[in-house]
Image (cartoon, rainbow, N blue to C red; front, side, top):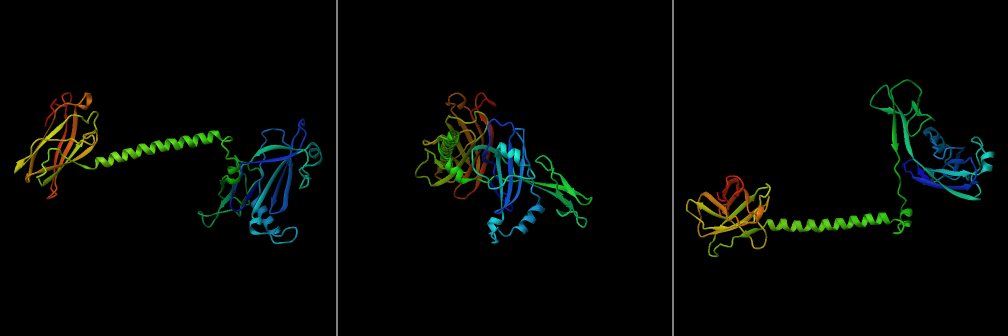
Length: 355
């Protein structure tokens, strides 16, 4: 696995191989670190616990020294910038001979011969931690010059070693996993990921069904915005009013009964008109419906409106709750509001179906 020391990338797992006897009771691992193309650190561990956790800490000072001393490769050629910023971490299992021969002070050579290999998996977790001390001249600034991270640092705790007594704190950054798209596209087969594909297909079908339902509801909302011409209108009448009827949100507030009205003004009144639309359902719960009323002449200043219904609806669709009725004179743009806020039902309110 590889990581950039400046861009902070990580890998979630790495697999490696080595030669080892399956009956061996002791397992050794060789861990090595390389900066650029030159080997820098090589160490050996002998864990007995199968859940052994090994923390490898790279000190920032050590990293700066390595970068300053290894600007050139073995051929004394200047390393490219992309190579000079790459860190390589290696992991392999040792065979029994290497366990008995090599120690932490004298690790095996790199590269090693690929013989009698076996595969094993190691989970890796990358993190950045730092020790910061508060400067004397300004408490708002933190510096890394007085404190450094100690070798006993783990995922659970950070050891800080400071040169002087001062206020200090620790910084922590979990390196994110980078996406290996080559691995993703190489393992995109349906047989290897049936659960993933089934989940994605189910989500797409669910999204498509919701999209169809939402589109139908949008069409219904657009239809509600249209103005319905009353069937009783006389084609010869040329003075128009817009009737706005608001139905309440109360339970069973909508109705299937035929609602009628008479509008009265200072200069006259209309006949009986039915609030209905042959193309869609009106006077539903929480709906606001608009109707076009045609009159032979102006009604003048409006005095009252009379409302009633025939109670012909079935069950809870017989009653009706009206919030208000608004009337707009489309010639003068004058608006009139009739606040109702009452039931038109035999089982609700005063038991009346007219107002």
